[in-house]
Image (cartoon, rainbow, N blue to C red; front, side, top):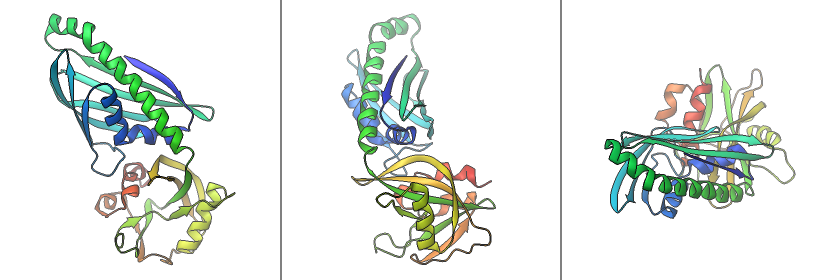
Length: 276
């Protein structure tokens, strides 16, 4: 069963809204379901995160736990890992439609208990799932379209020879010692790629060549949206910690060992494929 809707925001923003824990919880609540999204890395779901929810169908409580398999700019998918159903899978698929995004949200399942289960499925479950899908599209649309109006902060994923350049915060005190990608706010009238180049000069003292966006966008607080661009350093460039405690080049195996800022941590699974 599926539902499709048009969202007036680019796919990277819509994908972030799909990943947000509030999307799952709010959409399920609108369908009469209590849910808790256990995102281990922040407000955005990443592969491996689990969503536990308890539905009441035909008067009976139905506890379920699903696990995220995919969370990227093409959408989000999950499967059942605990619950009374033999099978349950969700797939939210995104396709660019000009400056907007078409979201197709689909759920498939297999009912238990043979013929009796199929009868209950036809009578009750399908109505519940359709209500849930409509609610999800509405929640994603509202969230993504509000985020699309936010001010942009750029991040630079600088890659050389299969390694990523990261920097360690020196301040403020509550963030000191944690790691992040270089970057900063886009100034008024400034192009995003120009902002990437400027921030890398200011923070690292190196020139870079932006190569396009990677991963989904990431909401920051109530007013900002982080957007990460892949970049290559200029030939022979040596990065310096001009505004941070230190900088270092890391490989794919080291990504999970760093104490990332929350906003950067939810991007790690998108960064890893770049480091091969």
